Image 1 (cartoon, rainbow, N blue to C red):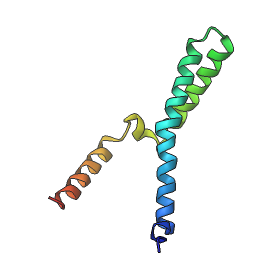
Image 2 (spheres, rainbow, N blue to C red; image 1 turned 30 degrees about the horizontal axis):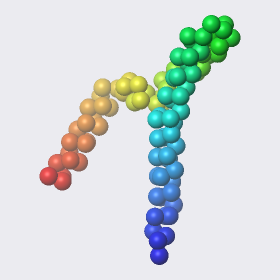
Image 3 (cartoon, one colour; image 1 turned 135 degrees about the vertical axis):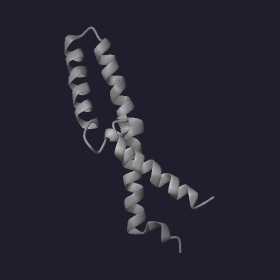
Length: 93
């Protein structure tokens, strides 16, 4: 029938994946470019806006939900994830 890929769990997962993909691969780089251009501008208002944008990005990316993006994961958590990935991969050798 073709409806098997429209189950609620798939649509939820796919929607979350697309939101994350666009946030980290499109929006964040675009905002970083805006900060760079604003900081290099000769206009005081643009430099002030760039600083405010950078501060807000830092605030958001340093929350627990985004720290992984900056590589700020707790070493204990990182080790546990690495061990879990190793065990998972060993199942399929």
